[in-house]
Length: 288
Length: 305
Image (cartoon, rainbow over all chains, first blue to last red; front, side, top):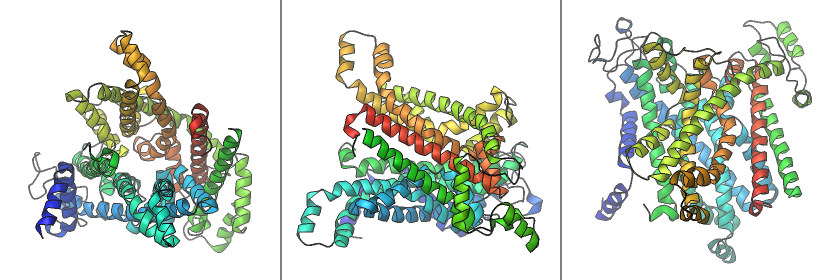
């Protein structure tokens, strides 16, 4: 890499919330390297090693650092593989929702008139539907599966993008550079994709970083309710729902660790999103 | 003003109509509902009788017409699982939901406003940081996980509170807290920014010049105006809370709308599911409508958009 790139990376690094970025990067690396990091198979357990407590408790073993579940599966290995499911679902769903919502928002804002009316009434309808409940209904109808969850979440979360992008497009349309592009003879599609889209992109990125936390929690909720990612796949929400059976018996490690994993991931996304919102907004940029 | 209200009202009706079509279609696009209702291995005659009973033999537009005509009279058909009219069941479950959501609202508002006021008064300091992080954390933890942690601590370890069920004040505490925590962060942030704005205004300066105590300036004159957006947000969040309570209600076996809807979906009791989702969406649409009209009434600048 040339020195210019390094300088740019250092410049960015000096401004980002470091702890959150490090945690997020660690989790992403974990998801990619799950095959090398996990000590045991995440889906097949050893019945002789059922319900071992974490290693530091009496009766725990260091071969199962965070203990084992009711089927004798290593909790840590399942957590490691679970990061894959969470990140995959969250990123795919946000990308689908972002593309769909941005497209509809651009169309509504740019063309106005009845296009705007139709798209915005649909957006309003989607915004007023209770997300988790509609997710449960759709998941029951489509059946369990990782990609079904991605489709459901992507198809639910686009509405906020549509509303934000429409508003931005409306204000962009009146700006001088769009007017000048029009005078210079640019076609409609060129104005939309080359002049307006790059300018609303910051808002889309900021919104995504804030939405992704919600998407992760909703995915975990659907999976916890037994309509999301099907067993025996290692997903954090599924681990919580399986651990619920041991709640009253006091098998706390089945409950605490998957939740901590979710909270860590979502917190780091929220902190980064909060920072992005301030950083990408010109009003706040100079304040830091 | 009148035109604006009429326009918004028509928008509201259109949105409700779209929602009703969507929810109706959602339960019809999947596999044949009769197959889901019937016991496994049912023969064609049995399936046909089920289709007849629930009107599934009609073409889709006719089914929708019947559905909406009945829905307008608050008739959502019969629950397959409970064997009772759906409207009655929803009505019966409503108090539990309102009690849970109301208490969660009080907890989240109380905490959010307190943390927000402290944050606006003292920008730094240990308590302030702690409160800010506490409310921020609520945003990152799934409410059902908080619920299970609370059970682990207060029911299993300390044996203080019941693990689930409905009835007394003690049953209400843990569900309401796990539901409310998430929402406190929004109130904290909004109270802080709105109070800071108000405290910079002229009339607050006048209060200070008059020599009023700090408590009176912030508590009486400042908060009164600063809380308007917070209360608005709280109103709009009611619906989010009702729908977000599904997993919490399931953990605590709390007999509210969330649990009703969840069981409806699991047992393929789609009449119940349709009714609950439609009820909540309509509630949401008219809540937003009320807020819009109220704001237009209070602030002439945002009228004819």
